[in-house]
Image (cartoon, rainbow, N blue to C red):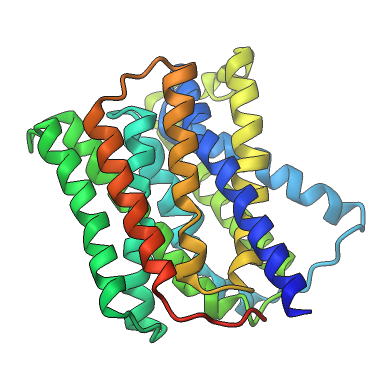
Length: 305
């Protein structure tokens, strides 16, 4: 049973990494049509509709009470709210490849938070590996010559905050996932994202007097394809996958799969968006990935549930 759960958890984590890796590409495409907040509103509208169909048809029975929503609210604040918000706005200023590389710092944040709040201990070699990942990020920043007042620096900070939000979510989920059913947890998170992002986006359109343009992006074929991918696969399906995987494995072990996402994001950016990937990007990414693999390889082995 443990081997079966382990295999399923790894498969869920790998599929999550593949979907997230391409999400940067589709977000970049969507940004050519409309603003970040409108993208977030529409992607979670799609997610909400997709999640609600099986519920309305009676295929899935929810067991949600008012106090459950309050308990899950802190989790939903980090993911999807802050994670996707920081990501979408960060991609306005930097390339998807660079964002993917920075997103590889998720395991670093996760390990630190897991050590503090979940008491997941770190060995000396894990600490060395963690520092290697940090040095990889710093190396990219130094080689890029970031101006603290530049738009690029703003984008980097936003993506780092997105990574930190993901780490907070991973740590909280390790505890919350033991209390709630997978679908209940995911559905509440999707509903909160749907309500929060649509409220903010609609308010912005109303204030500007441009509400008539709210659904205009859907007339663009590329946006429609992108938002369906982001809404169904990148928001709904990844929420299910991560909630499942984190209910079966340590937060630190799950976070290592974000590095697979980094490689996919880098390749997609270069191939489809013709983004420039310099030698220092690749070298820095290798440092980050080796560091994160080391933090997991040298860690204590934990049993799957």
